[in-house]
Length: 112
Image (cartoon, rainbow, N blue to C red; front, top):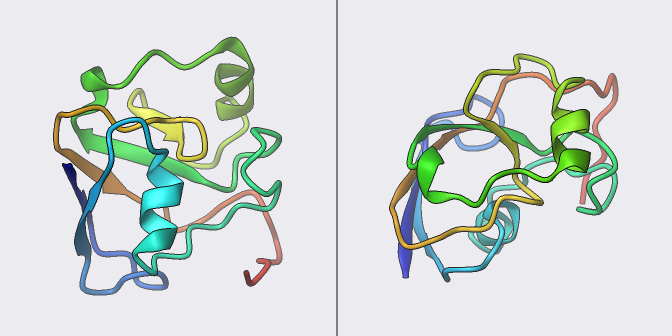
C-alpha cells in the first residue's frame, strides 16, 4: 500500500487527509474511496480537467502522462510543472503529497 497525503482544501477536506492506495490505482479512485470527492465531470474518462491535482511530493514516481492528458492539462486552471489529471495518474510505491486546486474550469460543480 502507498500512502497519499492530501493537503487541506477548504471545500473538499478542510483538515487535509491521509489514506493508502494500491499500486496501480488512480489517485482519484483512492481519494473517492476515502470520501474525498474530487470533481470529475467526464466520469474519469480523460476528457476534461476537473480532476486536476498538483503533486507536491512523489511526482517522479508516476509514469509519464500520455499525450492526451498533456493536451488537456494545458487547459487546467493553476497548471504547474507537477500537475496531473487524477483520473490518469496511477499510484506507484512512493508516498505522494497532493494538492487539490481551489478552482476548476467548471463554473458549476456536479455532485456525485
